[in-house]
Image 1: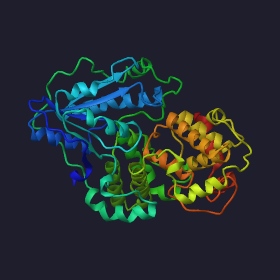
Image 2 (image 1 turned 135 degrees about the horizontal axis):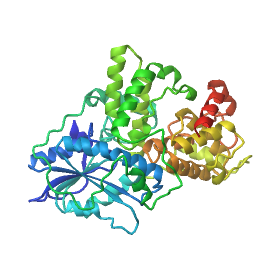
Image 3 (image 1 turned 90 degrees about the horizontal axis):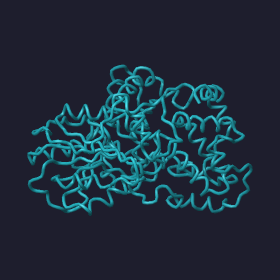
Length: 458
């Protein structure tokens, strides 16, 4: 079923007398359960060539910061070690300054038979996959290693979970299988370019400090990056939390979630690997895993489907017609209070729960999913316009969240405006968009326990 994951994004011949096949690891920064890496290895074996993996980290991507750089850098030693065991070359390049050359991919492609990269429908990977293939003289393949059911199997944008769910369930058995192993016919033994950056546990902070990035957003101690850490957290989730996920995942103070979203976003672990481990554990221990798998597969892949088939997936213009109508009707409704972006960013509202959620984002790089919905709803209520509310949410999430800049992030933010939802009773500001209240949160969750836990860690 691998071909369902692959798109050839140009029509160029393979280079004869090439030195290697090149895999450009943009989003799936791992050696295990990576279908793009598997496809690249297959191409290399068929042409009797070694495989070189290139992973770059530039200073110029939007919201580049110590937080994001550190998390990515922490994953590098894991990836290098695992690829070396497979006989695959690994070249990591850290572009520190905006004045430094930004053509490393093209330099490496000059010696490659073909380029393989990640098919990812959001953020800079989407832009690169649209721009780079036409500039190369060799084939450029984009491979979906992010979703269990490949994005290519769905032909249009789905309206909601209830429309995509039966389609995914129909296809799931064919794809919820372990990724095939990688066996290289030829080991990589060429010299790496001089600009290869050695990354160790000891030099990560100094490497980040040497880059022209936002040093005002500090690394997150509670979420170290890397595939080994992702695997450790998966094991802890299976042991301690899966059995209580269905009853407690919407109670933030219970800490019953997996906390894997940063690792899924940066590709340090695959959703396929997680789903297989969860299914196996649930069967062995007679635990219900349906709700977790619904979130991991149906809801997550609904977000990827939305991003794949929506050009402006960070805009109110992409919302359904009923949302457009109700937002227009209530665009001039009076707001009281109104906060500006700086007040939101500093967690300076009158609402102790909202402030705690924002403080969690600032300190931990993540908000519990249930309170993140409340966080977004209140930004809508307390912003001068709907457009300003959206801009504030995207800014805060993309700047501070380890799992931001992601199809899930944009879909979840736009869910606050009615995406993948239905009309509700009409009220000011929101119109027919679902409303969430502080009183409702107090009835449904232990708000005080959550606020105390945030204050202890913030």
